[in-house]
Amino acid sequence: MKRQTVNPHSELYSQLQKATEIFNDKLFGGELNLVVLTLQRGKNTAGYFSPDQWSNTHGKLASEIAINPTYLANQSLLVLFQTLVHELCHLWQHQRGLSHPRSGYHNQEWAEKMMEVGLIPSNTGKPGGKRVGQRMADYPAPSGKFIKVSNELVKSGFGLKWVDRDFKSREISCRTIPVEVEDELNRPLLDSFPELAPLTKNGRELKRKIKYCCPECGAKVWGKSGLSIICEGCNLKLLSEASEAWHTV
Image 1 (tube, rainbow, N blue to C red):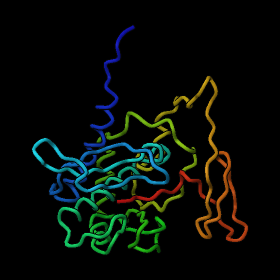
Image 2 (image 1 turned 90 degrees about the vertical axis):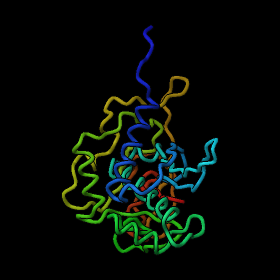
Image 3 (image 1 turned 120 degrees about the vertical axis):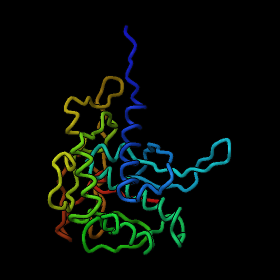
Image 4 (image 1 turned 30 degrees about the horizontal axis):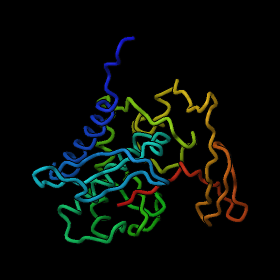
């Protein structure tokens, strides 16, 4: 049997590193230090930033940006890019900021940097949400720097060659998308892997129950993936656990 010559680790991490370096160069003037990128499965979290988590043998420190592959497999390149830039803003504040908020808190200085690079912080991930707080998501500013760089990146042919098969649901969340976004940027990552085999155990396909939550009152229901559930009191569709995630420090 011929030995596999493709290195999946190198292929995946080189793509993530490339995107990180491009955003650093285009949005932060290349002033940010390099980070250690990791893939970490976490509950309801798209990514997190951990300052000065790593050290080399000479005492040089490096921060960590972790990406949740299970969550992002169910989303798009746009969400991956948002996650990277969200965490790079934490790195900027750690390196260059004048304030150092408590762990997990997103303050005004961080929010202003986010808006400067073209991402609008929002605790709901949608227009009208609070721009500072403990649990924060974001959405792209129309015609902002972030969208411009993201469009350029996908036009150059950027795309992921590997995806985590342990995704929770095929359902994609409804997001406020600015105008003039490249189709490839907002296409679910899984659509690029049409022959993706399901996870199996002992020859049987694994089917997990997932959590659905009302975005207004927080009512929760567990069920199989793909359900369409309406909260009677709020008259809103419940979101699957994979539909919304938060970025954390």
